[in-house]
Length: 516
Image 1 (cartoon, rainbow, N blue to C red):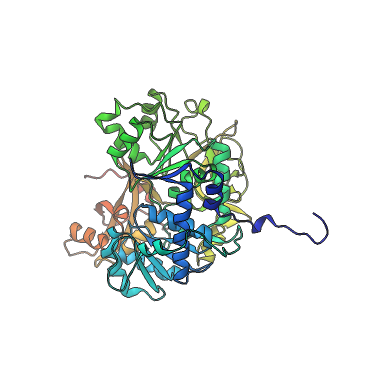
Image 2: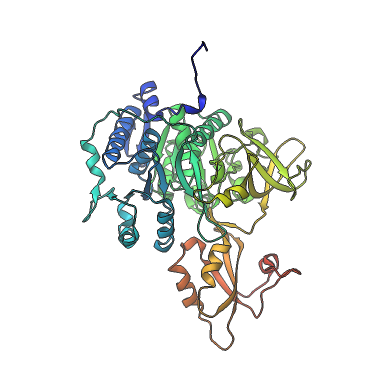
């Protein structure tokens, strides 16, 4: 560069859809449902521009929080890409949570606008009295009293003028991961995290413009946008938007050869393989089938291998933007439990309790470093400091790196467990258990389950002299916690097992043989 000239890579955040609409305007970017409307990148960009102009008419500016409470729908995706254009912060609300839990998340982020889907009208009405910062409630469906309709965007311009300058470090979204102290932690995803996750995925997984993927994972999870949808926009591929996982739709997509890439959690694959259509379905047109969210049982993988599909496990976490490893197809069958090598712009190491790197084939905590890693948690500096140290993300997961550099995830160093692809943090559930009258001690332990991978079992000590009502207890929890967090069985003991230093011994509880 010559005298007086300056340029910083960190300041350049492109308008992704606008770029893609100029490069491949007539290519299909989005299909709205199985067999639904096909939207070109030109039309998708125009629609998102109308969305951005509409939100700007409501006073939304760079840095403002905008909450979305909806199932997977095209409107949700449009708001996501509007955030990339305008720089507001997408505040994703998990519809599996109860209203009691959501009130705290809304108060945490202080959004100025809430957009919601018709399925969640009743919950929004319950939430409304607690709003203190929300100025406008916008319905994707029919608007009620004191609401606005998302359909108002149709009167807006197809072009966007005066887009603010965005930097890679600017926050794009808040994605809640659960919490060990009660309130779920809102992991921050920046524009840089979005970009580098896509760069890692496209370069290491070989995703290109000819690929098509079904979007079935919930969009409030990091896997919804980041595993395939964003990389496909990056390369000019196609996303087929599904409202949720549905067996009929999935078999239709695969039978028609409509998708080349597919991702699911083990429970989804288990349901596919239990269906009579599994034996007759031709999976040969799929280039990539990958499992995430929880360790995948070997029998599920073997059934895919029998069909000639190089099915593999992935590994990701919200704090690392979704995608982290690649297992080469030629090593899938001899590295059956491995997640493979780190992606292109990612460093990994395995350390002991002191932070010292361990040698090959030794178990330790997995640390991740790269530009895709979150800068921290929303409004939780202490949790951020505990998790991000010297640029390394301490995952809390135990791993082993073998002599060839392949990584295998061994388990979790903390007592969090995964049920049906959802993280369950026992401390959060235990605090609600202890609020129930008569419960003096409480522990939640994950135990194996054929369908969900793991489910919760509650171990309790209760006041003497009273009859403990399991159903009333579970009903109390059900009013305050999402269904996937609820224990599926309750064991009342005279005393909970403890270690020599007085801590609850959950290993002993998990190993207990109890009458169902």
